[in-house]
Image (cartoon, rainbow, N blue to C red; front, top):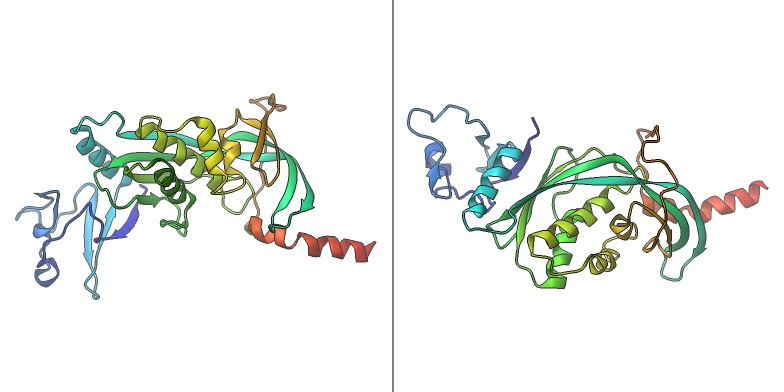
Length: 280
């Protein structure tokens, strides 16, 4: 079962002021209703348990599927047009990649054929009653859950561009390996922008979303394409093309244990060229 961890400063849970002093879990409430009664104080609930550390912090371990559904049910009561979405976030391969120029802004111009494949992540979005902060959980340790994550960056960007005040509870079921050049994070960002637009009643056109997405990353605009595109510039100039590969074409992806940072790869490109010049 997928689980995630966060501390009790979350606005979703409000502990009683004396919970730390009394170590009484029965006083811990969620939106006014207790998870425990006197007979079940030490019994583990189906989806939540509590641990009090020596540093007087309460950690909550929960089943995100159950929690997202409960959260969305509360929003449903307020007759929200859309309260939850489960979306597939595909990754991409580069059928070919050419680096054509080093730019003055530090980036590189490229020419590449991007193509989506059937490997991807699943992201669950739920409209949160909170108007202060997004909450992100994931099944993979080490993935940042704050605004370093492109999902949170995308949601912040959408609010900045549209003036929306909606915040979200998000669970990322990660399948795409990181540091593999497959654009998993970029796809997640595009998916988050698209989802936010759904929740907010289409405040932006898809073309606007695509244009805004280049502020998050060079690969993000591609994921608003039709699935295959010739990409130039930093990668943000996207021209749809007919898919050159059959959608049912079997494919083997081999990912070494080592991860490669895209920024570091481009940074070392000039050094690699110099090495080959010496070798020749």
